[in-house]
Length: 53
Length: 447
Image (cartoon, rainbow over all chains, first blue to last red):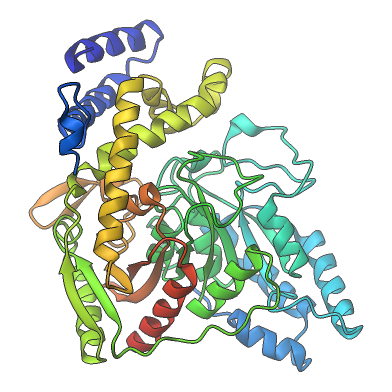
């Protein structure tokens, strides 16, 4: 799931559950997740594990 | 409202020459609680009657020739996250209303066997999910050095009680810095041992993978005594300081020294200079993935906490303070694949800290990049920018919860307005004793 799709779904769910205040926190979390996914230590099915620092 | 008390060592000497009794020191602490807790809000529960009875028992035992060791008759305050048989473990939350612990946490059992007096249960950031102590069902605890400021958190009440002379030691937990942060903010020593060394059985979890139990004390020697008691060693040998000359310390400059309050930086630099003058070897190191610490930490701690709280978030969401509820809810949206990435990142960071420590006795860095923040502040100015308080408070400590290395904060002077600053030392895994030895040397060198 892309971060954009995840964020849209999470915000919609939070609003449906009556917690709209979560929006800004989820947006912050999305930034953090983006940074995590970009990290060079992540495994990659193409064989990036060998490049793991 | 800061007040001096004897250290555990000083008290022990007087106790054994009958210059003071356990009842007298307990009464003195209770008197200070009576006088100042209204302002500080450090205690959620004061266990006056129980404490006095324990103190009478301690004095009786000593008169009968039974000496339980260095903590015999020592009043200790307990973060209200630890189970004490027969009392509520509130975790500073209305969610826990009606809870009564049916047995002691492992750490409490050790303290009892060591002869410590359990004087009361201290305030904290609700469920330990925060670093300022502002979100508590019992209201914020306040910093004894400046009542308008936070004592840090989440073990804020523990640190405040110690700095205000309401106990001779305090027990805390540390999941992202929750012992070291309040220790730095309140001018005490705070120790987070190696992960897993001290049992967290009977402690309300935040993240079982990151939670650590440890002491807050007035000095490093006392920290050693409480640490050993928590390991079940009630007759520890005396800790001797390592010589300052030849001490090998390394400073992770990039990231860890990038965002520092001017006064904090000055105190840190002065400490480095003093250690160098005393003959310590200081060099610089780098944690290559430092920028990833916060995302890794966030994904782990929020997921773990959300799993623990999910049922109550559904059943009684309004019993949480709003900010804590929202952060817990946020954790429920983290995807499993991102959690796994965070776990992989932890391993990378662990290896990098191991490498940085290679050939060194300890890492040296500030504990908090800012002095204790004003209560209610969401941002503070550091240099030219306003920075979120939450990010700043965790910035320099959370790494060592991820990696499990032992870490300790000790005072290293004050800001121009008199607020304490903390110096953080980090040792090799399973080398907590060596870390304390280095800390004792540095404490003596810095005076």
